[in-house]
Image 1 (cartoon, one colour):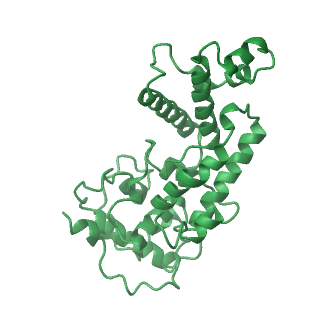
Image 2 (image 1 turned 90 degrees about the horizontal axis):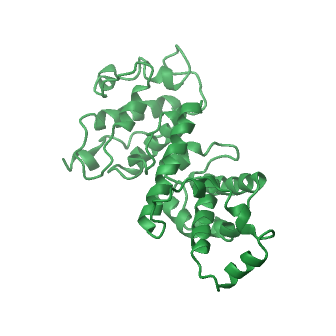
Length: 295
């Protein structure tokens, strides 16, 4: 991962979408080697998750204890525990339909008590497969895995108290903020807002009335009110208007540019100036032109 990070899979080089794809393609398979036949203990899955989190923090430049929950969600990266369940499920299905004369079948038949297949079958993902599912169809299996993971995510949303995670899109998919037409800086602000890095650690706001929290920024007198008025109407007054606006963005980069897109980017620009006043913002004079110009 360090080598991949050095050639560009980091916050200042490749996009987060590309970096996550590179991680998924070249790095994660190394962690997954042998997981299909290994009955994992809870300590094993925790360790695997820590390794994945470390790699993802290298991509975004996060500190050692920064949360990766939102990062994995917006990049559509499952937990290592779920990945292990998928690999074990696929292996058990293949093993079940092997000819009786195969070595694995013979070993399991004659040494069933010591066979790891018995413990591997104690898998909630495998047990969730109905008898009428065509397990020989890769598409059908993948669809079932996605449905199962979505169900688990929905359950997590009901129990979770993580505000940033709950503010994300509920559906399991790559968040559009990773690929919608936007400059690197604009995309960075959208991602940082999702991850809580913008506003980041609260500090005294330049308006002098409060700290730079998410709640204060949308009410701050230094942020033009007419821009906030351009954002979509909120059905729930408890929802942050910025979160709601980002969630309401189209899921396709070919979709028409929303009317509030430019206003949203300018608002985040104001937030960035308030939270990081030492930055250089003079070069930003036009916002949202990459997408708005296509409409």
